[in-house]
Image 1 (cartoon, one colour):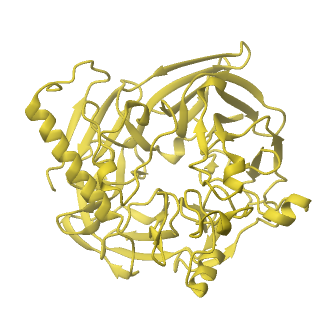
Image 2 (cartoon, one colour; image 1 turned 60 degrees about the vertical axis):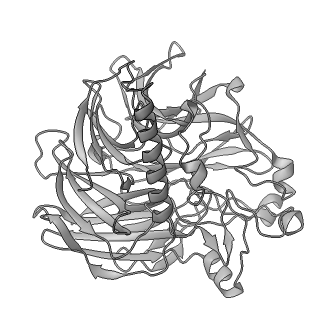
Image 3 (cartoon, rainbow, N blue to C red; image 1 turned 30 degrees about the vertical axis):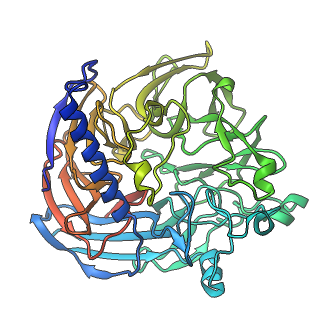
Length: 512
């Protein structure tokens, strides 16, 4: 198992045992370099796709784990000899792992977007991306407001359909069995903006974020999009349990913000509008990309929108919280206060580039690390309180989907050592939000992706089930799928993928 082991860790400790020990410092630097090389190898890019049964190389496939895991993320990081400038820019690569209780069938495909088709036909990069401009400098990029829909952030399964999502454009609907790309989904034109002078230039496609939430009690699906143009607006979506998309709610914003995720409660949607400044002029002149032209601006404070689920004007609170990519969960108390657990950074983090070995091997700055923070909102008194809940640098949180919008106890995350953190992650952790303790599983020298929780049928506790984790093993140069006991993080089985492939961002599990 490559030295993987589980450890129990108490909530917070000020001690950093061995922090000043020169030998310990050398070992930590060596581990960072090894992990960085592993990350670079994992992200070399997919050159071949497969449709095969996976070999179980350790343990035994659980007989009662039946269903399909879908994963999505950038599958390649260069195009016709041009390297992408950011981790978020590569074409979407969807993986399908079908568990039937005795075997696991693996299939992977690239999302065949319109942009990918056109670039393949042209044999060159045609579109700007979040962190990449076309080759050719200002002349090739100036005054082009159309960016590539990479369809690379999550594989979202809902009501028998599968969608490859990217937060700044339309979803792509895929065949959930073959992974063939079927359509650019606008939900009966609900995701198309009215014709205007601006949409004549930039197109009518509204953004649809990569983090939809489904209420496990009502079956409603909620999502949002952050639209920029002559002015910024927040677009809120709601789909009924019967699959009918309501007319979107469009809220005009007073400035530009960054919003990647949101939280859902019984009666509200919570959106944390992180203050950011964008160099719009130089971005439109083609001198910058959207990400290089963005700066986190803590002087403005984070605006927290509390929006009724049935629609209406938001209650807006403001607090100096920090930067949020992902929320863990949220719920409402009997006294009308709202509790939201989020992963909070000191500022917009410097994300690791898959090819930048030198930067990857450097220990991250403290402000580049996210910590679980409990935020309590009192809309009546207009008070915001926050407290770091666990002293563990972590990301990519997941919970039991049956607990969305309700009080919960456990979450699972990717993590790094709290005393000697690394730029890339080699650890998975289980968070106990009641006792404020963690169980941590080290996979070094492997690097790991987002953990996905699958509850066991008839489970008597909130952590009874499995955790499915995609990993890369540098000693064999291959991808792996690890099935863990969700309560203990002990191995149940390990499956070898037929190739090395990037770890991806987000996914979902559909029961069989």
